[in-house]
Structures are given as C-alpha cells and as structure tokens.
Image (tube, rainbow, N blue to C red; front, side):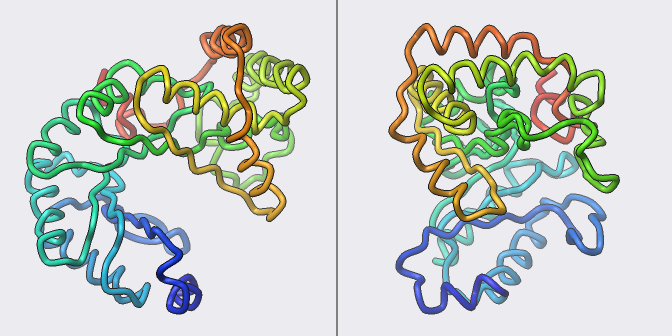
Length: 269
C-alpha cells in the first residue's frame, strides 16, 4: 500500500514483481504455504488491490506447496495471464523437475532462488534446466545476506536476527567461512572494487558460463549502496580471479536454510 502511493503516478517507469504462496505477514508471523487454484486467484486480486494497479508484470510463486500438483498452481497462474491481470510468470526455490513441469503448463519467465559465491547448489540442476528452457534467473541474497561484504560478524547479529536460525551463520561456521570473505576482499583489492561489487560481478560471470540471464537483487537499507551495487555492472573479473573465488566457495560450511526442504536444495536431494 505504501508502494502504491509512488507507482500510481509512475507506473510506466516500473517493472513490478510480486509474490504469493506464503500465508501471513512479517508482522503477524507466517502460518503456512498455499498453492491451490482458489488461493492463487484470491492472492492476485488482493495484491492488485493493495498496489492499486490493473496488471502485475511478473508474478512469482514464492514457495511450492507440495500438497498441490505444481500443474494446478501454474495453471491458475496462467489463467491470470489470459485474464490480463498478469504478464509473466515466475517461480521461487523450485527444483529442476518442478520447473520443467511448470514450464510445460505455461512459459516461465524467471526463477528466483538463492545464488551467490557461497550458495551454489542451484548450479547442479536448477540453473542448467533454466538455461535449457530459456528461463531467466533472479538470484536473491547475492551478497550472502551481507556476509560476503565482510560487514557481518557473529557477535554483531542482534538477538532477533533471523540469521541465527541459518546453520552457516552459527559462530563456528562463520569462523570457518571467513575464508570466503577473505577471497572476495582479496579480489576487491586487486580490482579496486568493493567486496559487494565483486560478489555481484561473479554472478554476472556465472550467468555467462551457464548461458542464461542472471539478474541479482541485492537488498539495502542505504541509498548509497544502490549506486555501489549498480557499479558492479562495469566490473569484469579475470579467469584467475574467478578461480580464486570458486576455490573459496568450495570450502563453505553449513546449510543455507534451517529447513533444507524450504528451498530447492532439500527437495533435489
């Protein structure tokens, strides 16, 4: 509703993406996942109403409801496209098989999943499937939830910080994973860039390696970080620098989710 106050006057400047599938809210807590057709329709209508718009450019399934065939969920999403309420469909944290099944129902434009120097499990199956189908990839947490910038320490996480629930943010794991930050900082010093820019440039290089568009979405609370992150587009890493980062990535300790089945990694396994 807050965003609607901006886009009502600047809708033509915005490619708007939003999600559905997780019930509840950050303020009230989350109560579950739904992917049945009726919920797909009601969630879309609610988003359109809150945003004050007629059409959603990219509509994501936030998490797969494993109780419901993905064909049902995507079929209902496809009906929204036919009705002119949605332009393109996206999926988040799906497996390669789920992506393939969904794409057979209606073309999928983008997959949004965690992908970064220290979260590379998607490269085994999901990213190759996306490349094969011509689906773009939208890496979330491309800066490792801040860890890859070198600004996150075990003793600086607040008591209520959700990262305490993520295994790789445990004190021992963070100590072990410091080798990844050191590699990123070394490449940053070598290129005259920041650690964040190196992490984002690495993802751009991975997109080229896998022959698919990779458009990361780094989060920030500070306006100046937007300019810093955008500067990564001009940074090109050498093969030697990529080798340094790849080598460090192989040493990461700890899962990226407290519940592996919450993300594609657990269901792929």
